Image (cartoon, rainbow, N blue to C red; front, top):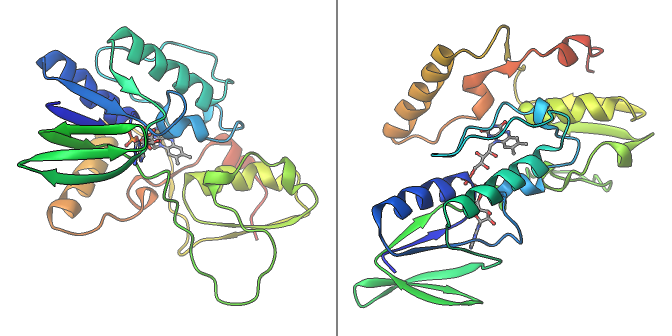
Length: 242
Ligand SMILES: Cc1cc2nc3c(=O)[nH]c(=O)nc-3n(C[C@H](O)[C@H](O)[C@H](O)COP(=O)(O)OP(=O)(O)OC[C@H]3O[C@@H](n4cnc5c(N)ncnc54)[C@H](O)[C@@H]3O)c2cc1C
């Protein structure tokens, strides 16, 4: 191979699109059982109309679909159509276990075989490695990360603490509060609300700020610390959090 792409989320598929155009010999190895990257694992109550928007992959727009459909389903279908449309060589489920140097090339190893390649594009995302904060003390109740969240139903009648001041925390809080006995919201600092639309100018300013941080060699801050949290009608209508 000229290139092995690891991961078939939006990063891996975008890379594959341009590799296809370049005429290079390549393959995309994806650990997931189906198209959609991390999106296929998002909880069913995360509807398309509630996400920030899915950026089009190069060369093919996301079709207009019912905003009440789960985003996981819509994006899975979109990415699957995309792979088909551009005849992208995606192999799945293939989990890459190691990448080693091999006589000037790279050897990509998986349980399903090995590939010798001149280059690797690592497009493995972050979803498979969720961050679990350590809490000192003796809490023995159930603790789960949004990566394992499947919707509010299982929290009916329970006392629930939502940890985190990002968009996922807000969405979980709003829907869990409707069924739980009590909800408490814990954030490291007061949430930063953004009143008004997320304009292209605001988006460009956010990207420039993150790029400057990374180029200076620093770890970027949380996404919402630069984008702010949307003050949606649902948020405005919600009762005050404790
Ligand atoms: C709740 C939530 C809501 C979001 N909402 C939005 C939104 O509205 N709009 C937006 O633009 N972004 C949103 N994002 C962010 C967006 O989902 C991510 O930026 C995007 O999925 C990243 O794409 P990716 O291709 O880098 O990685 P992923 O989509 O994570 O894809 C990585 C792929 O690599 C595979 N992989 C990993 N390790 C291996 C391995 N060792 N071998 C083989 N394959 C491997 C995985 O199986 C996966 O298929 C949201 C994120 C979250 C958590």
